[in-house]
Image (tube, rainbow, N blue to C red; front, top):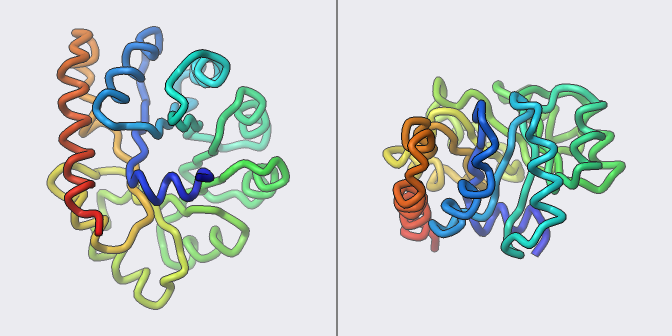
Length: 212
């Protein structure tokens, strides 16, 4: 299964935006125990690329898919790909980021908000368009965008929770990006990996319930 097919099958990308990535190993395994296999480490933490490189070169579960988020420049894109990122996510749409990722045969997911921005990102060659921030938009917005443009592959991110994930999946998205609603910073600070696994299971079970 390629990256896009995996996104479509698993339906959830967990966005890891933490100040301390020294716990990355334990966090990855706790999430994996809960059925989470697609992880996005954001460049808001400069250690993200080292984590990605370690995971890609180490003896981690074979079904893990590791990507980079919060990419805003071409040099960041190239550094992430060199580190082994299997997909590149940006909160914004820059044609040059899409172009560089495509040249390197790496899946790229630029961010967009309006239908015009979303379609421009898609037309530029994006594999998936990150609809961000989705919190202000809601699942009905996604459904309305996809009605005349069913060919789009969308990943809403921002404000996705257990309460609304089903509505987004029903709207026709390829997958969703989930961060803070799954990764409680206090739970992580306490190294409560059982709780992380339990929360991950709640999300994966909700997704399974929505699959045809």
